[in-house]
Each structure stands twice: as C-alpha cells, then as structure tokens.
Length: 114
Image 1 (tube, rainbow, N blue to C red):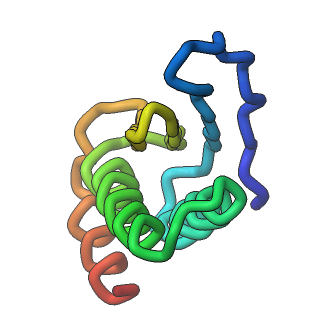
Image 2: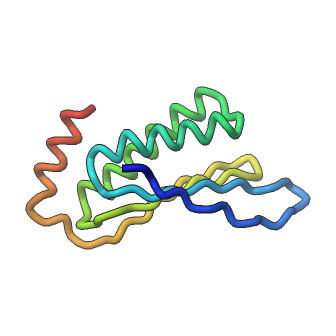
C-alpha cells in the first residue's frame, strides 16, 4: 500500500529561515514501521541532513511508530517531520484507544522484525 503524503502547507518566512514540513499517513501495521523509517530517511536526504541525523531520526521514528502500532487500536497513523531554526521535530499521531488483546501479538511480530 502506498502512503498518503500530505501536501506541504506554505510556511511564513521569518528572519531565522524557512520551516520545512513533511507528513505522511500509513496503516497501523507492523510492516509500516520500516516504511515510515524509509520515508523519513528519504526526506532527510532531500533536505541535505547528514548520516548521523538520519540514523537518529530513523531510530526515533521507529520507536514512535511502533508505539502507535503496538499500543493503540489505531487503524492508521500520521508521521510529521518539521525542520527549521536548527531544530528537527518528529511527531506521530494515532487514533488512540487501547490495543486490547492483539497488542501482545503485534509486539512479538515487531520484536522478531528487529
């Protein structure tokens, strides 16, 4: 399934520089964790971020998305990267709710996937 990439909204120009934003939506499946990491890394390459930043962001995205997939009853999640003023913000939104009985299976699947 291809991700739904959100259109970038125009950002106001400030004296400190422009803010860049990239957001995407994926189904809340364990397979989406790796896809989210790839999408984030690809965007950071486009933005000119170095390998250390990309590695750190990949780890953080992986953890946040895994939490959304394993610990909620969400059917989908949205991940957003926002870069500007020498800061990079990573946010993941899910639909919330208790994951219920399926969370243990999802956690084992993710642990096995590495």
